[in-house]
Length: 85
Image (tube, rainbow, N blue to C red; front, side):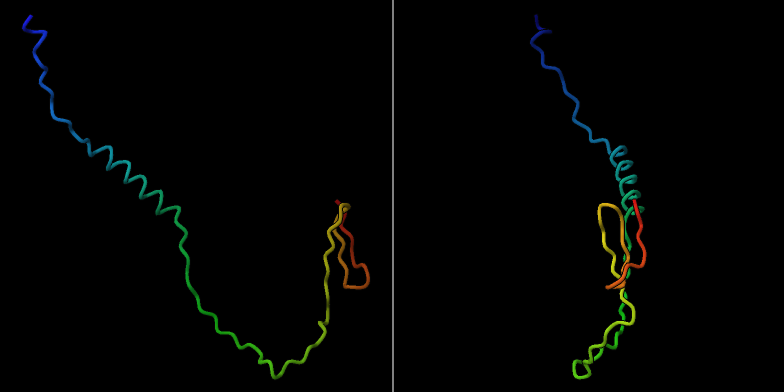
């Protein structure tokens, strides 16, 4: 009868660090390999001023018209080519 009422002695809970370190190692490696590295570049542009704003028509104009039948390439007034599906 005494054995039934005895409390079992519990071991203190242990935190297993080795599996957690393994997971973090794989996770950090995966994140570093899939990270997108971007570069910032500065482009210097010489834009025309509004004082010298002469509007000129472009030499060549290309329009792409999308239809159910396919694509049509025009120069604004005449048909250049038609690409069917």
